[in-house]
Length: 136
Image 1: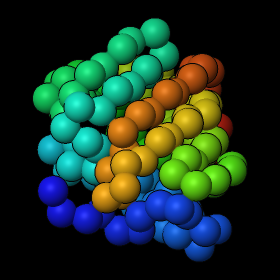
Image 2: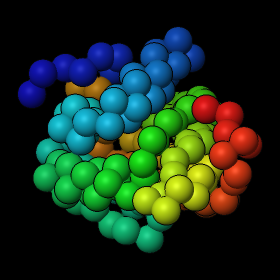
Image 3: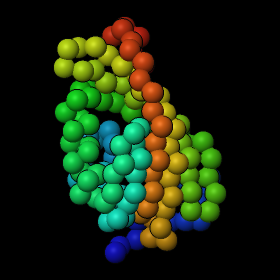
């Protein structure tokens, strides 16, 4: 497996780079691209859904972005230590009926020695917003 820089242990500078790389990948809305940042056997909890392995990540993301139209995400580094990073985030999207939402959440990430994310635990809440309230 190739090394995916930056690798742990993280400094503030390298943790910020990892967070920006994740934001950029997720904003591409390309499930294959996003999945490459995770270990083959990655473990996720996303809301109440449990996802195991890259193949399940790809399928999850395909479903997500079919539902969450015009998705746009912003991540912010919250904390880091050794091989772990915590982020807060918000993203905006609309459903097929045109209702806009802003989703708020926190993620806890754990990386392997090669810089791939081994674990991702996300807690997320959605708030309906008017189109004029969009920020992203």
